[in-house]
Length: 485
Image 1 (cartoon, rainbow, N blue to C red):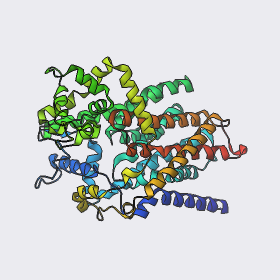
Image 2: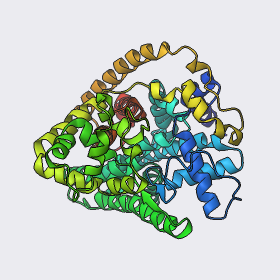
Image 3: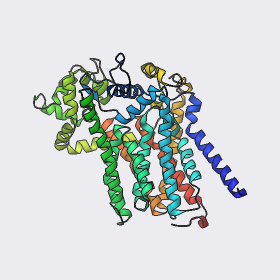
Image 4: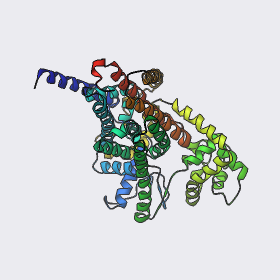
């Protein structure tokens, strides 16, 4: 081994050490993994699925019945893939290894981009330093909070990174690289229902950007993304078939779209103008909304999840009516959109901008209520599921929000300047544009269809400083080191 090779090995080791410390900094400081209300839901649904398939013995029924599903329905709002993974790890008392799975998929996606950039544009570029710097930049933002999170949220940025890579480099990628990107994107899309919506929403953008970037094999990126979307669709259909065959139940997606339209106004106005009408299924929900006159009952989260008579509606209906309203939500959206297109479009735009500004990590820090809800998961971990050090005094969250916002704004400004400046290969420019469009797509889907929430914004916003670091690393290299542009 030459002295230069030894120095390179040492530099890479230091880069990897710094990236690892940054990535796991929150886990180290907190002392335990972070978790959310729905952490238990993935655990329970996974265990129930394994028992239904005969892969686990079936003792007494689990509390919660698999996350709120009625006896003849299965909740399809959670990912079957991620639930099964959670159930398998819980079965061997290693539920917290979900963290390593999430982080491993993310690191693989960033490393793939680094290797492609090196091969296409700069053979002398160190992919380890390039990828490590990207992770370190993200670690000054929200990334380490999601790296410690026992939820599938870290796989949303994996989807955005791989879609950006396919769009930017797809026509020049080798078959093995294309397969790796497709595989990583497929893992991401089947891990959360919102990822399916994000991928579908990005298909037109990918096709347009691919055409603008050049006519040669422009069809390849959108074709691969359509294949990824097909994987997400296939999971849903397979889940419905298996649920019908094994537990004789129908799969029901919670009526997030209906609830969102009602809270935003167009859905409420449409129901007010058309109900009561026995021919309109969603009028059943309209009746339930008037059990109380509390204005907070009209918020999307209360409509979908609340069970009290003061704030509840959907959950107070019969199981049959709940299923009917859930199944009708796409049709309800079409009806409202047809009658009030500008109002619906305006609501989506407002929610997208509102979601884009929500970047706090507060929803990754468990409360006492979340800890109590997740006690059943404790037996499946390598240690107790407790809140950890960060939950003690939450005043630090406000400071972190202010610092993070300044950091993200500076990173966005730097990214835009570098993307518009000279010296960048076309592929890197396209990659950067697609990362920024992906962050907007996440805001559009999560804010417009679900509900604007800090959890959804913070899970992807760290991609902006990651992008800035990548572009800065390239731009800061001496001209002699830029072999191919």
